[in-house]
Length: 92
Ligand SMILES: [Zn+2]
Image (cartoon, rainbow, N blue to C red):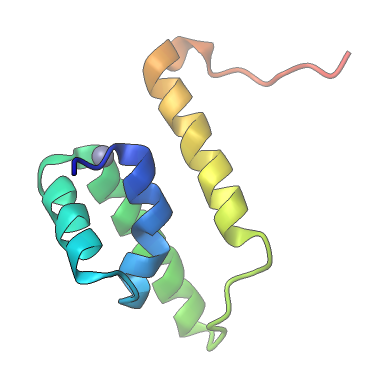
């Protein structure tokens, strides 16, 4: 089984919570060792959790993981299309 980045993202919250199956955990860790993107995402996700924990609010806001995934998707598209296309979408 080879995990793609998207699969790793789906497991990041479980990874940080320590909820992953041993087999999945091993694959995620293997992926993180060689993937800078996912390592960076893991770091920033962990930072968010630490900041949250610091305010003694441990529950993630509703929709957090959905928003996280949407953001990750957007970031990946940024990688594909190149940074030049990073403009606001008009609403007209
Ligand atoms: Zn990755």
